[in-house]
View 1 (cartoon, rainbow, N blue to C red):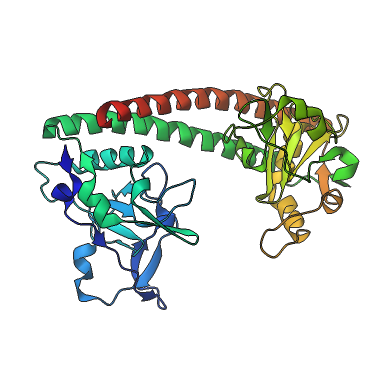
View 2: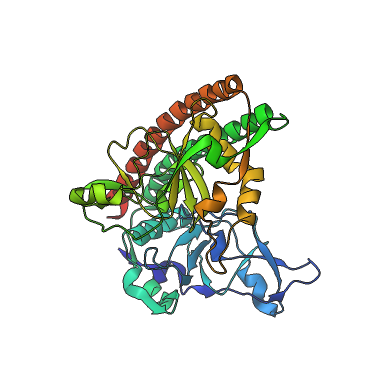
Length: 387
């Protein structure tokens, strides 16, 4: 094992500079550009005016590792790392991050060191180096860099390990890209089939049955009946994580307002507002927590697949946000939601669309299975290589 400080030296502090008023500033990466996969998201990079003369030594180069010094939360510790593979000498990094740059590139392969630090983070190694202030977690960066150890293997072995992990990561990325592409296909097909149709507009209360689960937070337990919360309702589909439960003996009390059916549509009324997905068939017996409304489409008027996409549409979301209230956390009352109108096209057209969605759902389920297997393999390899 070798101390990280011997490989990279101390973490180099970032720069934030001043507001860029003329658009000629330098692109600066922030922790908002970090992803939990260790990849940098370049979609929203700010530019800043940097006046320090020595900033050019800090311009990022391929193979640099950026570490998060401030940020995180109780559930997501500070200390994430990302690997820089962008254009040389173009980007800086801000003062909430630090730069780790390999000193001897003939002895240490930078992507290998990144993977080692990525593994350390997910093993919880940064937690004991946190200082916590109100709403912010800070990494004792110098102490962490001085103490964390990297497994010492030959340079050729480092390249071999990195190549294997890169290949598995590429498969993961490909599966995620395929899932996003299928979601985009459904959105495009929905617009193509219904975007320019002059369909009759009807209030939701006319076309759906409503169950509003606002109220007291149900008692949780370590096992029992699965509980659907607002965190499980994602626009890309139902998420099994986080998985929460209520005691089995509390089921009837929690579900007194009604029991939704598989394929009914879930709608979050706040925190977050306006997320939509259908209840998946694999849940079995379940219950629904607060901040969720379920909608059961009337069979002669709507299909569940059409309703789901109609609630995600730009037109509906705009109308819904106009009816929302709250200064800090936006929400909507069911009495207002029920009055919002949606187009009701012909049932034949809806059925044709639903068939496509069900085919896409099947493909997505297979891709998710493959993605889960790949993630398991990746985690197993990380454990094998980095303990």
